[in-house]
Image (cartoon, rainbow, N blue to C red; front, side, top):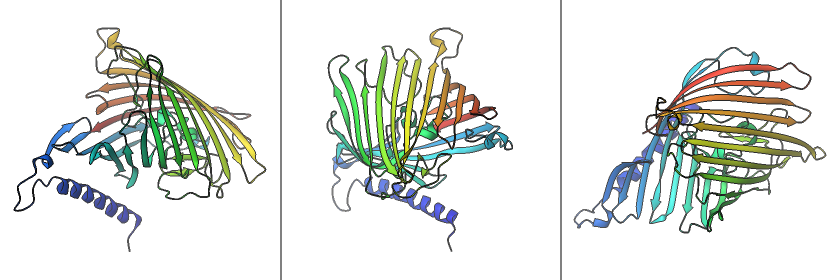
Length: 410
């Protein structure tokens, strides 16, 4: 009889074997007894996305990269969620927080792209997408992917400025969903430069192949590139942009499902809610965000609002609000004695629910230092955070936390 752990090990091995077979089959340069087709000769190199195998005619490209994230934390790793988390015993930990395998590239045409991302430690297939990117103004994607609703969540965990995302991520992220998306860049002259994303999704989270009812999740994002340049989803100005680059974006999501929150694990519930019946919760969300980089300085912010309507209980509505502000700077741009690879960053975040079940205000202030050995591909981050929770009519609770993390891509 197979246990759950044995099934995970077997599935991981099968996945790795499949990737190896794909490479071996794709690297065949000639059939027995026939002259090789020079256009199908495979060349190998190491690039920004790991080991790359491509045919001479560039019709096929396979990129393979692994990433490991080692983390030490005390007195605990996770953000406090409830008051009980402040009273629990210390759980100092050292762990492999993430172990990822990334496979991407294109097939048949350079504009027909694919991407997989697999979490080895938990045997979870996180992303699998096919993208048609022939035109800059109109692109298509289908599969399971991270919705671009918030910049903080969309940025890869390996390209973040802090050790991890802020205290509001749990309440407002849409995370990974399955569905279809159209997106593109509408590039005009000067400041008339925009990106857009529109998607229809199952709205039941990662790993769910069906919806719970006939109501889909709908998502839209409009981003103004007000400096006339596109700013990618990544933290820290490691490129030291010599010209200002920034964005202003507005995103909306509406969904009806049994869930009030999402995470990498899939659909779940916020405090004060239980996983509901099909179509029980109508959730409407909106987010305004900014991002800016210039000569080693980086800035990003988000302001969220979220309304949860219980359709089975007289349309009772709860309102949630949250924000974060984050900035970083390579001070060697200002003072000579500051080490060139060292960045300092600070973040302030707040979460403010307004519902009978939970009116706990949550605040986080974090300070981090990044040492970049090779950009985001090899960096060390030290972070200290202060959490201050205040419940109406209750006793405030606070806590300090320290984390040290090494993130390396191979």
